[in-house]
Image (cartoon, rainbow, N blue to C red; front, side):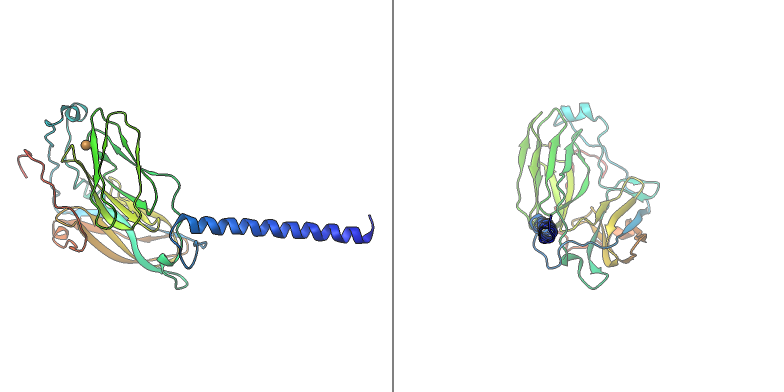
Length: 290
Ligand SMILES: [Cu+2]
């Protein structure tokens, strides 16, 4: 191999590598743009911390009320002790609170909404089991799939009643395939009801980013992967005409956790935020004490 051939060989290898690198970065950029709405900043690629906390309930929580399922005996057979689940309190801690980053500034000065947050490819599952929605409250990203399943031996009719997104309702018979839907606009929170069973209620929050969580039975929640910055965190709980919203400012460190503990309760319920469009509280007939 003479000297000139060697030079050409090295040059062509270098050029091939450059082309390969270019192709890769093009692919990444396209995926980012395709997955969500266009944004100025593209995806966030820095360090991340967490927001974690516990939601407590002060005062005496309302006792769960037994649901009269006589309109559909299948529900009563599968779930003889069906009770309301609007306020689930265990040892003073409140479950089913939706906690999310409403707004904020990422370290460096960009708004959280300036970045592209990829839509997860896996769907969120909403199951109808024992004539209850499980989970009762869930978060989903814009255009992410929600897969609704029927685990009961009876027909359900899923009916979200959004304000910003398109309203729909769909019957799901016994053994029917999962219903796959999505929501194209951010909206907190969309009430979901069942046209067959008036006590069935769920709430779906649609966000442009992944920074949300629902409290567990022990009242705890954790929002992971949050860029360092200063945020407005909202805790939302159903009840009353519009639900109750609590707001807190938190500063997330580059590693580790910011704490966001909230308290709901008898006093807290009175300060519900009327800006949230919720469906009126649905009274279950024949409940007796209320
Ligand atoms: Cu139903």
